[in-house]
Image 1 (cartoon, rainbow, N blue to C red):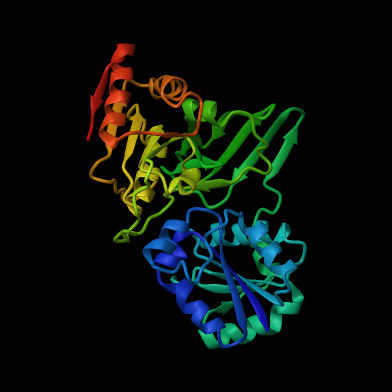
Image 2 (image 1 turned 45 degrees about the vertical axis):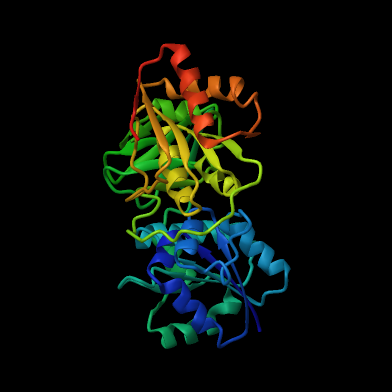
Length: 366
């Protein structure tokens, strides 16, 4: 039997359960395994699983599932460990709704006492029951899951759209398409958008700077996450790489999810506190330093961040990081994403010299 496996998120990998389940499924057929989403890539690298889990492509989970189904997989497993049962079930239901009845089985939170297996299609029920007995985890039908969930969290009122967030706890970051747009102050949170712009968060505090970065979006299809992007404290795995014959610098502006496309660069300029934190942590694995342009507006989106010893973090007054970023992109990168450089130190000096000409107040953090 040809079996597809989509691994989602860092927790299922950090806990060791992704590999355990993969080993179990190897008894039943030939496996095609890939990552769904982007945040699990670093966990795959740290666990040294790149040869087992395909991380070369950036696809959302439903796209990964659809691809495996189109390639002839007779069963497809979605491995996930959500923040709670509610968030895990909500995630699985949303993914299934986008996969056009692919033969999908979700294994949710196997690293917790409330672990369960959900056969999202009737054709997968027998196999799921068998596996639940072998793995000693609870078998849950889709109907039970749907009865737990608010399957219609979106309401429309003329040009105003409201979307309720499932499974949020108080004092958590709220991400919309990878950008922090606020923080929860209760466990009952609803996003409100008018004409595609977030205007309020019921049960939360809005972060206006994040909303401005996000811009106009379709709140009904946007990817929402809450809490930390990665909670586990895992020792980073450093990957040896050869330095390019011609040194190259890249520019990354408020888009940490794009960090991996620059893993062959020699230095990266990152704009924004959270982008700097996440990209620095990722690039540490590839021994790549960053020049982080920040303004102290950090939301702590990962439990612990790492950075290369040659990195430089420059902190400006609030709201100045974007302005300095534009200047660096226009005058040093000449509006190009990647440029050749002569040396790392010379490039750093060039950045500092440009900043000094602006008369902006700043502090070198490292």
